[in-house]
Amino acid sequence: MSEVIFPTMSEADDATGVLVTWFVDSGDDVTTSTLIAEVAVDKVDAEVYPQSAGTITLLVDEGAEVPQGSVIATIG
Amino acid sequence: MTMTTGAPGAGASIEPDPGKRKLSTSKAIQEAIAQQMRADEGVFVMGEDVGSYGGIFSSTTGLLEEFGPQRIIDTPISETAFIGTGIGAAVEGMRPIVELMFVDFFGVCMDQIYNHMAKIHYESGGNVQVPMVLMTAVGGGYSDGAQHSQSLWGTFAHLPGMKVVVPSNPYDAKGLMTAAIRSNDPVVFMFHKGVMGLGWMKKNQRSVGAVPEESYEVPIGKARVAREGTDVTIVTLSLSVHHALDVAEKLEPEGISVEVIDLRSLVPLDRDAILASVSKTGRLIVVDEDYQSFGVSGEVIASVAERRPGLLTHVSRVCVPDVPLPYASQLEYGVLPTPARIEAAVREAVADRLSS
Image (cartoon, rainbow over all chains, first blue to last red; front, side, top):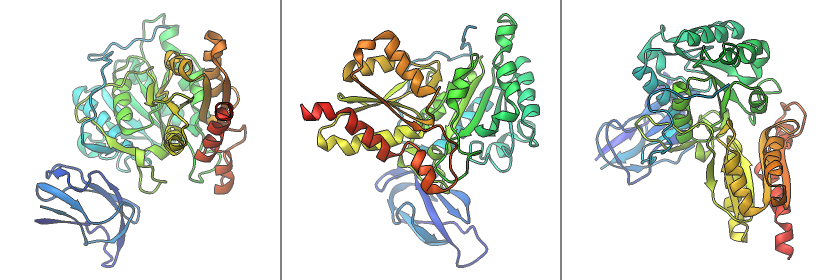
């Protein structure tokens, strides 16, 4: 089991971003080259790729505000 | 003027299965451009903020990093100059993709577009081709005012010599961009900001969808049946396709069956697809985010009326009335072709059926 972390994009420790788009659904099989999400902090976008391959479980809803550094999905 | 499509792989009419991998429309456009740039050294991108900024609506994100400033060229605010430069490169055999940041800015550079880009092939007796893509952002709905919210595709489609494509979703955006780059004719590629899948715009669930990883073409000039139905035909394009599909889904439990035709291209216009659908339903609604008068809606209705006038039992249109797009959100949504206006039009169209 590995975790997918909302990337740290702002120098402010308590910065909160938005989970803009999920490109996968819970239960999908992903690899390290699968684009799984796009996130944004202060209107700067970043693409998220998993660190490991497996079956993904999404933990936050699309459009949700998420503190950077939090876990947004798990891969088992 | 003959419209030719001569590049390798052109004319393929089979659109591949979308597969499972999902992209937003903006990423689908980026991927199409990147793949064609890898395949053909003559393909390059030019425009305002297409480089490190990645295009203000993310049509070119990431391309500078891969291809460098020789092929991803940021320009000053000088539309006449850089569109003219693109035309010059195209007639010399390159395949430029030139971005006009907002279609609203066509006013300062229209001589280059419609007197040169669109007419060189004709005026040279067919000897000189202009294989150029003019990519531009269209549409409103986010309070950007009267000079940054227009659709204007009817204006470009009215003038001869340019193909005009207007994708509504990621799959079509990639396939039409690929076809546009490979086409030996000038193609105006008009993307609505609201279908790009951008986090800072109003998000639309249909702006993210399955897209094949390989290169493929969506044929220019071919409409798509976005949803099959039997009671009424909605002919539309771009963001309004999504609104029409939402309305169709909402009304299905009431027994109202709506067919939605996504035109995808305006030039050439797929009149056969329009006629085939209206042959089935007899009722036609045209939904168009462009201005109502002298535009796409009139052309679509005339296409049916000229060929099969007896088919039509109901005709209406849901367009922007002939006023500039307001800045104030409440006023803007008062003139845009909203789902509420489309739903009202459908109910009116089928009123005779339900009362009989």
